[in-house]
Image 1 (cartoon, rainbow, N blue to C red):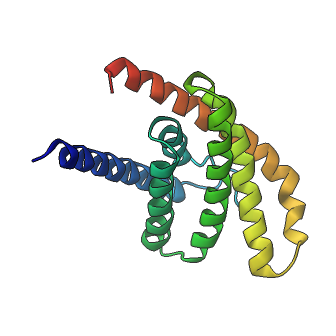
Image 2: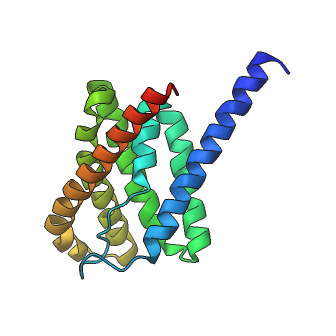
Length: 171
């Protein structure tokens, strides 16, 4: 096997494993009881994988993992309407991470995740407004901004820790 083909197979394997990890986390978290009575608030633990991928693999690979996880998560959960909410939130969050990746290094990535969390919730609200045909859903914005900041801080610190541990392993 040529070196180029081996590198391609290694990259594909890494993307598949990270997608499987993110999907598993997403599906497990979907089974947990809601944190609050406000719809849409959850930790978003699968986003740890997205943050990790943006900062270690790059935006393109992270986008492939995100898109696969969002689509498969909707299929496996049997809730296809979540596809639109997750896609809108995930893409807006990914865009924020890509922009912040240029300004921050791997030691500061935990700072990018709260911003991405807020963007994720904003994207979901915009999708809800479009699907429901009303801007009334934006009444949830203050609560979702706070939730996005807190959940994003948690996922950012987790991703920061993951990168640190992976670097210690030499990966």
